[in-house]
Image 1 (cartoon, helix red, strand yellow):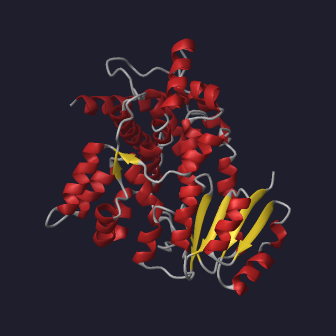
Image 2: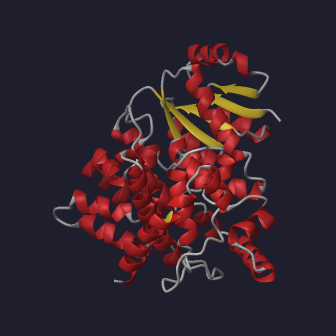
Image 3: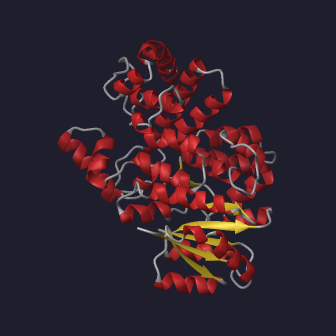
Length: 402
């Protein structure tokens, strides 16, 4: 099915340029063009869309306001902001309404790649309600204790950037959000940012204060009364997986950038669980299948939703423009053979760490191989490394018990 894309810009020359530039996509996309926010909303009221791409600087209703309205009325639509100028106010006004930012003028291949990549990830979500929920997310919850610590640090007379980075790096949601911003076109960096501490340094104290204290960019998790899922275990599991994956990569590769990637992807590998925590009916059905069939959570998710938290997480991070280097280990951490890579990678480390450090793992017992894809490890000639990796696992377990 062809994807429906709406482009919005008040300059007729820009609209004409887009029509010419994207002419070759007419067999793959149904494209609509609007010259104002009001016209865009009118088109949306009559035609379902997959993606809205809006200019920022428009009279009466600018791009930030338009995308905010789209978010409220059409939560399943992907929202992309085009901007020819970059300033702090632009970022701050649009951080909650725009999924991604693209610099203007934009080359055709960048627009095509951004839209195609997002639409491809959407196809992994078979459930329309689930798609709307994930695409329409305004806030991702943070662990309450970490959220409180961050607020206290920001409100202190002399907030420490080091301490702020440490707090954010311990939280799934905060890590994803700061990486979303610093990997956007507004910063124009030549390389991708993988470490939340580095992202914090790039954002700076003034921007962070505005995001955290004024805009409420991060929010504390409020457990749903029907949910029995332990968020504390999820956060603990994510940090342990990140640390073990980093240690495995450190042992296997001399590249420090791979370590950074392993830590970030390890922290965020289960980020797809967060939308599910807001959907108790889904969780109840999944838990019912687990009890009935005595199966893994991920298998119960596929059975009930046609997808899993791994694909949900990859779609969410892809919406925010995070690089494939992060998306791939998030998406395939339960089934690494699907990536069809024939060598050791960050995915390998996260697959092993996640399998050994299940949220309810028993530190008194050695890690089991039952959830490891042994055929995958055999294919890439790494079965012989399991013993060395178990030593690292033991170090993580000892550290956890202190």
